[in-house]
Length: 434
Ligand code: AMP
Image (cartoon, rainbow, N blue to C red; front, side, top):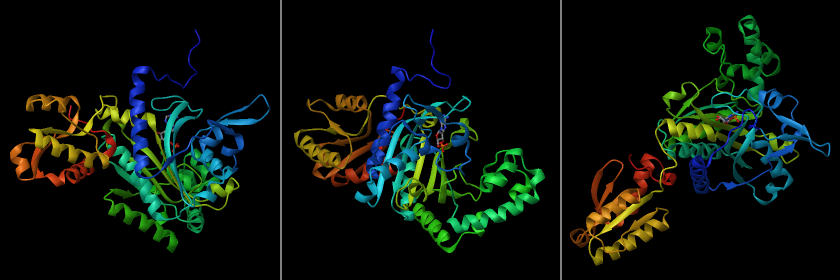
């Protein structure tokens, strides 16, 4: 019997539904933030991923699938999405058409890693890249998009861990200070970090072995070396996050594994007890040299990536089911002809605003309409009888919390949008209480 290659797995028909649901949710959120989908090849020229001789990351050094094709071309299966998109951006001169280009991708990636729980050799990522703007608002918007995705999957306790690596000058200054400091502690460093000290001292801060040791905790922090403009950029990002009510935690040791980051770097976590220390769902940062490295113009950029397997696992561990039946936002229960007419009007406004709605078209009694609301997995049920209609009022019930209120007929849309914003997000497809 021929079996699947090591580190791969099949997504069987019964599991495909949750994948498509996750992909749908991603697409809806990207649409709201005006990110457009791009699909680049799964294999690229070897040089797309191996262009920077100084890149010492495991992914580039040890984990790529490289091979010669039958025409003697050196090929690499993509281990991540950013470099291929940067190549496409330059090759198609997208910068000449759109000064700011916001792209997203979903698809398989390949890394020759030791297969283990949550780590496979073929896995899937969703990511965004915003190219052409150095505005801190782009960083904050990207982080908001990631937060909205996690929330819309029903995951709670989203935290943004964030830091700034500053500009080139900041990193140069900081690198020198770090080398000096860790050279003094060379004998305490693990073998990997001793090598990092020579090649990429910032990466020492990523070390999982030494991270709790006293000399490590006492190491100089990058915030003392930010240039004025680096500091301003970071403060503007944090301010924008505050304005959007996105909780964050500044982590001075966060550097992220890749060499090309500058300014903002961040990771997004959700509160998933079973994940333990491995609760990072995605992350990213600003990178300003990649496009010019690939032969394009100097272009500031920002990107973020999520592992889809990890998002699905997190959703499952939190008891949320993505493959459950479809749901709607509001079911309108109307009692009497006039009420039905009025509900039709409100429903139309809500639908134009992006809320999925339904009502009864068979003139059924109240009990049957409640049943139908249930069958449709309605997040909210609106009830309009003659008395309410006479006062331009309507009853609205949140089926997740069972809270019922009487509001103005003209308030339905805003009321529902506000409630959805407070809980999960508009695009979730409501997750009705089980
Ligand atoms: P990275 O591109 O290394 O920053 O990874 C981004 C996300 O992709 C991680 O948070 C993981 O969820 C996911 N990921 C990376 N490598 C693998 C792998 N070998 N198997 C499954 N998921 C992965």
